[in-house]
Image (cartoon, rainbow, N blue to C red; front, side):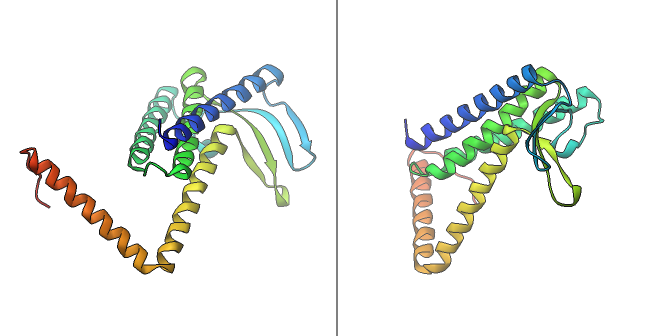
Length: 196
């Protein structure tokens, strides 16, 4: 198994298991709407339920509509994540980790939606001026961290290409050469490609 595959599968499994374990613990230990202060006036462990998406979006929609919408959106996101993963270079561990976290978070919340009809949220932060961030869970955190890692990697790659324009040009040339090899390979097998 390639290192990127191990990281992708491992991050996905660990994030789903941790998310599920914490939600089961919250269900078992806290009644709905209970709150335990961890850092007074800043961070609390709570027991909240969210039938909607992020920030409660679509929470008032009929249950069948919500479930269909959320399953559809999650399946599209999972398909895109796996598609991106398959295009990664064999040694691209950081992107594999990022995509694994996103996939694991999406699956963790999907499990809740299918079996509970809503998502269990339990992390609550009070910020400046009495503002309270909407409750969230580990699955949400894994998705945000995974996306943040991808953004960091994209920004770093952009910075590298600006530092070394010749290196960026070499990358473009290598990509074009790879595309030509694939086209020749398909033609050699007697298949035709649509013209661009």
